[in-house]
Length: 360
Image (tube, rainbow, N blue to C red; front, side, top):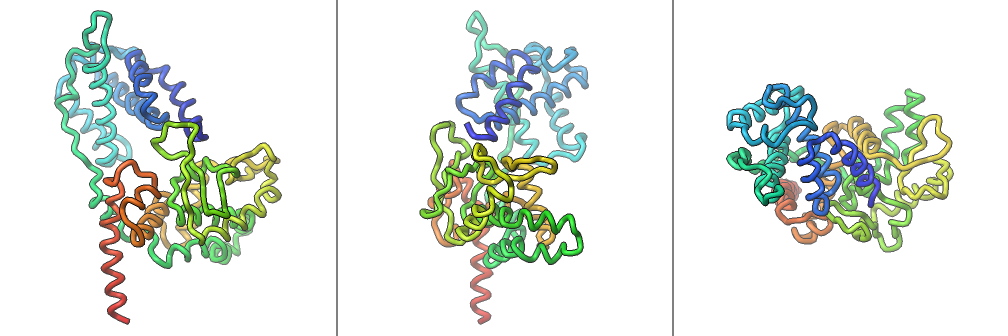
């Protein structure tokens, strides 16, 4: 099991104990099919919903664990509408439409299980009445809409190389008067450029980058072996190709990894950090990588750039040279429907390229 899954599984096992018995039963039912990360999100959604039920007086339970099936069974449609309104307008920061849709889908999955699959001792459904069956959850993630939101917010063409070059040189010039920032920069620039380069030349997800081990890389054949999202076979790692452009950054980082980060031989992680006050390097976290990319992106003049948008940047560039099926495989998408976003993104990219060519 990869590092992120191990962490999420531990959190899931801890938090599910504070859920009602029927939710624990549902999580066990879903465990063979869904990742611990997904199930952890389900539990968080149920924590929020049960907490709201109790706050609204729709449950007499003193804790989420004590919410009963009978209390779910007698919920009315106006209660569900009220909860959706709560998510949309009354929660700090307000949830996006996508988040609200996901949270409602989590509830519908639980209610469907309780009313259609789970049985009591007499072989009757655990939940006799399923209010969530009446709730229509509209599909929010349309590829065309996602593409529209991404346009102008990813790296295109020469910007991919320029961003890596900025990490290697430009950022140091921008922070030369800040001794602490400059020290951290010189310590980490080869590592940081390598991470950005691998994502921009392979399309890895941040979790896949975090989980990479030294033994997972094959520079000679430009291959990485990663645990892919949605693959529950813990014994199999998917081979993912990276482009030639990343070899220089990868070799430069590998040459300094052990000595600069004082990495012990037992540490298998490819990307390591040396925390303040620590004597040995250890695996970088997902949060650290995300913060690192945002730091460089802000100085680069692309404050909206994130790790995931680096993945989108690669995918758009890759799709311009390949078909949708090769792009799907490279990115590890379960369906070409997800990959369709790049057909819409490249519409504008290709039209812009034609206009530039006509100006020459």
